[in-house]
Amino acid sequence: MIVRNLFLLASLMISLATVHAAHTEAQLFLSAEVARPGDTVWAGVQLKMEPGWHTYWKNPGAAGQATEIKWQLPPGIRAGDIAWPLPEKFPPADITTYGYENEVVLLVPLTLETNVPAGPLNLSAKVSWLECNESCIPASAVVEAALKVGSETNKSADAAMIESWRSKVPEFATNGYASSWWDKSASGDTRPLIIEWSEFPNGQIPVSEERLPTDQADFYPDASDQFEIQAATENILSDPLNFRIRKLVKKFSGDWPKEISGVIFMKSGGAWSTFAIK
Image (cartoon, rainbow, N blue to C red; front, side, top):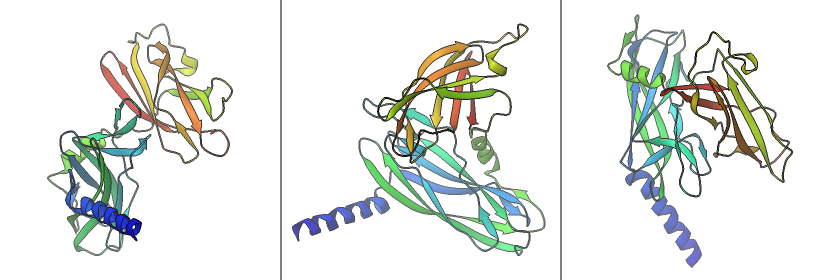
């Protein structure tokens, strides 16, 4: 009975923390105040954290939990997947995680069906996140915004802000060449992996090209239930717009992966470039 009461007390404390002790404020913004049937409107779920607190990316890393958005939408509106801005890499002494400090806007495309009726609509979503400082607290909030369906499209006052956050979402590279291969045989459940990127085939840079060397490069992996690409990065080659890094893969189950995906970012001459690869 004592154990059960302690469990109930712990559950109550977590529940109260979720509702009342959040150190993060959530709001919902839309890129349009009026939209036509068939339009796609961008929704921005803004999370503003108190100083010292952070929330997590879609792959939280060695600890943490990704933010979730559960929509409650009227008939005729469909929500797409979350578009995640590039996160920060938090490297405490023992674990590394990926997430956001201060503020982030998670972006979701909302598509209006062609037969959605004209008139005002209320859009809402339950947002759940894990916020951490020296300790971690689960928190959630219901966010709402109004959208009118009409005969024309009118941008909202928040359209520019949403567009600025869309520019921080890594897009798939259309120019350049990414490849990866196993560096060595497995040692137990870990195995080193090489990831290479070049703007030119086979890393061959034309003589006519004058490029600054890559000062820093890293790879933020997407999450997987079967394996983990660990956070530590070893730079083993850095030429102009051509780099090669080594990461350690830890396998949880199944075969060794034959495909990886995530975000590459590199710094050349003080300028950062980020893009998604698969």
